[in-house]
Image 1 (cartoon, rainbow, N blue to C red):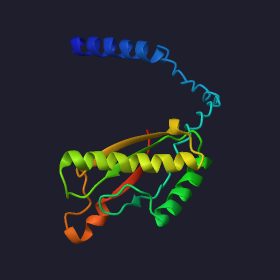
Image 2 (cartoon, helix red, strand yellow):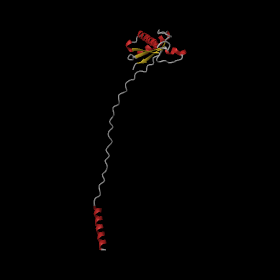
Image 3 (cartoon, helix red, strand yellow):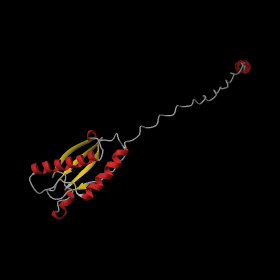
Image 4 (cartoon, one colour):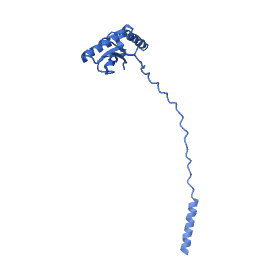
Length: 160
């Protein structure tokens, strides 16, 4: 019994010791104020895009490179558009139908492109703004002989 009393007494003394210890102080977590919003610089505007010019195609009679009256009107419209954009350069692509040899059609396509260029130059477009190329019969629109007229053309592309 003496042992039990001694154990109880020792337990009582320890319990008083632990009760008497100061409790750990709870640290209040300090929440920092939100950072001040710094005004972000606005990004510069995107560079202006090249204008989306739509220049009409002209057509030619079989085995010819002379500008037809109706196509002269189209070239006048194309020239007016080009005058509005003096920094734009173009490529005139000459095309042919598949009748004849490839070599002949390449030459005819070049003569057609050159005729269109000369006409635009007479209308006041600088020749430095115009390149020409011939594709001959390499880029056909149709292979139907009844529609070969669609292949006898000059297309106008804005140079990148």
